[in-house]
Structure formats: C-alpha cells, structure tokens
Amino acid sequence: MNWTILKLIEWTTEHFKKQEIPNPRLESEILLAHVLGKKRIDLYLEFDHSVGPQELAAYKLLIQRRVKHEPVQYLTGRQEFWSLDFKVGPGVLIPRPETECLVEQALKILKNKNSHPERSEGSLHILELGTGSGVLAIVLAKELPQSHIWAGDISERALSYALENAKTHGVSSQIHFQKSDLFSAFDSKQKFHLIISNPPYLTEEEWGKLAPHIREFEPPEAFKGGAQGIDFHLKILDLASKFLMPNGFVVLEIAPLQSAMLKEYLERQKSVSSFEIVQDYEHRERILVVQYG
Ligand SMILES: C[S@@+](CC[C@H](N)C(=O)[O-])C[C@H]1O[C@@H](n2cnc3c(N)ncnc32)[C@H](O)[C@@H]1O
Image (tube, rainbow, N blue to C red):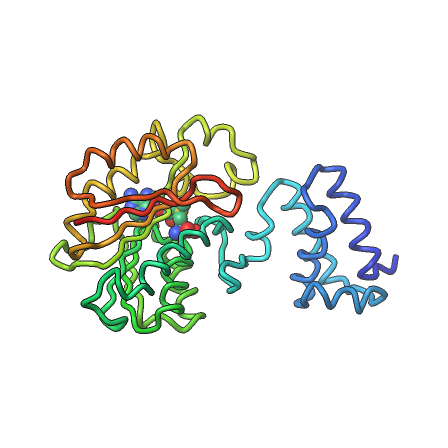
C-alpha cells in the first residue's frame, strides 16, 4: 500500500478515536510531523507525498506508545511554554499552561522598580524551588537578562533537562542549578529578592484519580504534596523569611481548593506584611503572592 501523508493521518485519526485518545486528528498530525522532521503546517502542503518504510515504522511505534497513554510531549520530547520550545521526557513534569500565570506575577513584581527601590536589575537575585525542566528559571532569565537565578530540584533527572534547556536558550551563565531538597543546598546568608515555586500540590486522593496518561508516566514526586496537598507550600513559607531580603516576595502556584487553608496560615504569620491570591486565565485561584517585612 502507498501510504501518503493524508492517508496516514486519516487512518491514525480513526484509530486514535476508537482508542479514545483526545484530539485524535491533532495528535496524529503532531506525531507524523515529528517523525518526518517537519512543521505540522507543512504536512498540509505535502498531503500526497509518500512516507518511506523507515518513517512508517517509527510512526507506528509512536502510535503504539500513544495508545498506551504515554503523553504526546514525551513522544516528541518537546513542550511549548511562554512561546519557547523546551525539551521534556520521562522523569520530568510536562510544564502546564496555567504556570505561565506564575511567571507573569513574578515579572510584575520584579519589573516594578518600587518593589525593591534600592536594587538595579543587575543585582536581582531569584531562587526557584522545584525547577523541573527549568521553564520558570529560564523564562525569568530571558525576560530579565541581568538577573541571577538559583534553581534547585530533588530530582537529578529533572535537573539534566533543565541544564540542557538553559543551554539551548542561551541562559546557562545566568542560572545556577543545584540538586537540593527545597532550601537544603542553599545558604541562608545569601538573600533573594524573590522566591518562586510551582511545588507538588496534589493530595493522595487526587493523585489516585489522575488520568492514566499522567499517573502512569509523569514523575509522582512532581505531584504529591502530602495529605492536604500543601506540605511544600508550608515548608517554603515557614523558611522563606530566612532567605529573603527585606521586603522580599514569595510567589507560589496553588490548587484553588488550597487557598482558604493557606490564607488562614498566612494571617497568623507575623513576618508576612501582605499577601494576595491571584486567579488564572480560567478564573481559578491559582497564584499566591506573599510579601515579607
Ligand atoms: C510541579 S513540578 C514543577 C516543575 C517546573 N517548575 C514547572 O513548573 O513545570 C514540581 C517539581 O518539584 C520537584 N520536587 C519534589 N520534591 C522536591 C523537594 N523536596 N525539593 C526540591 N524539589 C522537589 C519535582 O522533582 C518537580 O520537578
């Protein structure tokens, strides 16, 4: 049989539909474009081109993996974030679009000259905890080219993606990656203007109910946040003031259901001068911004 690009996409779309794979047409195109080393849009210009046996075999393998629910991003090894391309794969969390709100809030603070009137961009020091593929540290480094960023993760595998992504985006010299259990590898004598984190924040129950393409493939340590999902938030908030400059900020991603518990905790903290919870694009309470005294 002569498999043209169009015939292959149509066959795969039907196969994915039967297997209840979401967005079957889109995913069949993404995977074929990946195998052929082309942009998706180029497939449309070459619908009647034949696909060779080696590429067919490679595509078939990806289809089989996708049907077993492996995330499409692990199959292509790529995920877009902040309109930049990042390498991802087994062992590292696939960055989620709502996390871009976390970057927006951090940039709002860091670009506001009034939040730390004494500093210039060149002296901006930022700490990221749980960097994963490095997306947050890398986007901040690109947006604030004079800043210095320290970024930790407990997973060596995740750090290897982060290092490679930083190199690809030309910001390696601005970011110091460290294997670290939260703050453990960082020195509290070193003070930061802002601490940012998208920590693991699912409860055990939520983890158990996750769709198979997440639970069976993405690393559990990127998701599990203890009984109420806020273990990491509380550990970060408990220690933050030791690592912050005066008037420093903590910006954390949260799950909407955690906002009441975190508000109650923060209202009792004497070192906190103010805090707010910001909604994401879907109007869910998603970002916690805390300023310390
Ligand atoms: C939700 S992911 C966030 C990854 C990335 N910052 C992002 O937004 O896409 C949480 C990250 O925290 C890391 N992590 C889990 N426990 C940790 C710990 N005790 N100390 C440091 N990092 C930890 C995980 O390996 C994972 O990379």
